[in-house]
Figure 1 (cartoon, helix red, strand yellow):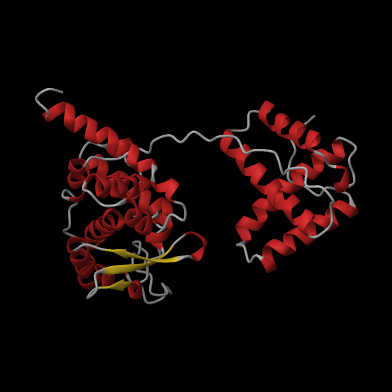
Figure 2 (cartoon, rainbow, N blue to C red):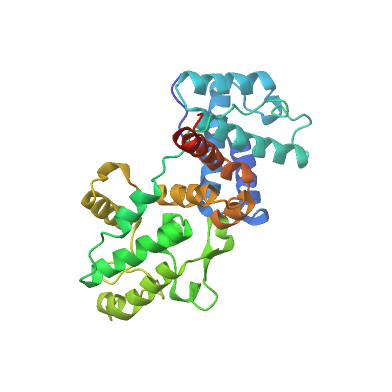
Length: 310
């Protein structure tokens, strides 16, 4: 059997149920367009699999068919994280059907998601971060912008999407914090240090006016590219590659490594994990706890290096 593709399931009954589910996700749950499309694609693939197995009534789907489907995905070398996502989509779909009386039994109720082993994130040492930040030339408008941008990225542990969408009004200079719109349009407050704030002020005074173009509507966006437009993700990546290569770090450095380093350095310095969770905007503390493993390794290394009987 061919690998299921997102497509019309070509069955009026199943397409009707899928349409109702999509409406529920969009209108009642208020999920984003991208999230809804992801759910829809996952369920379309499953319904296509059902039809290939002569199942044209959702009430006939049982635990065995679901297990066969997941086994089929596994044989086609889907990653553990992908399998987990498919199960999550199917769980939402069948919970919706069951809660709305469209099925009498929930076949996915006792199917567990696969365990996802989390790789420890790469981080830079404090010395490596400082090496990058302290060696950015600031003789021109773009250099000042790069300096301010990377200082904010590290000072606040932002995602790239959060960084490029920052607006001038999101910075509260007197109070020393940023207002950030994270995943799911959730607002959070993130402290910003004086060094980063000073460079933002410098950027606004000496750099941004030169980058701003009269014919471009930037909608108060803080960081601009050379054409006066909002920086793209690729633009940020290129800036980071340029300045990391300057100090010999090259391919090791990418935008998210500053976020990993921000969290790790805070924990190494003694910050409590709940505070770091809030600053990162993690809804689940287990996501933040991955950085504690790095901190333990750091502490062990410090012990080995400095303890006289280690």
